[in-house]
Length: 71
Image 1 (cartoon, one colour):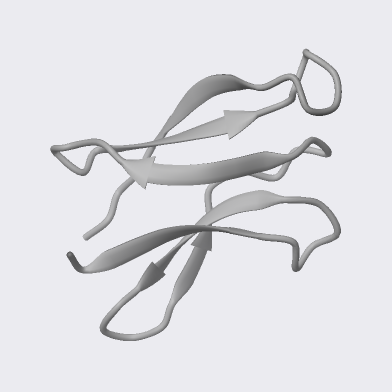
Image 2 (image 1 turned 180 degrees about the vertical axis):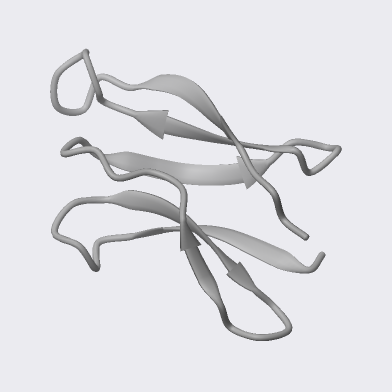
């Protein structure tokens, strides 16, 4: 694929981002004060699914999705 989804702690907590495999450009997809981890693209590439402990307490995760424009 053209993009790689990953979790990063660059901004103080775990956020989800995507990185262009061609240019190295990084786009942050989440910016909450909770931990957003283990991202993966949907089969069609329109969404990134990830685990997060938002609204649940530390280490109790649920699955969320965010729309992406990975052109």
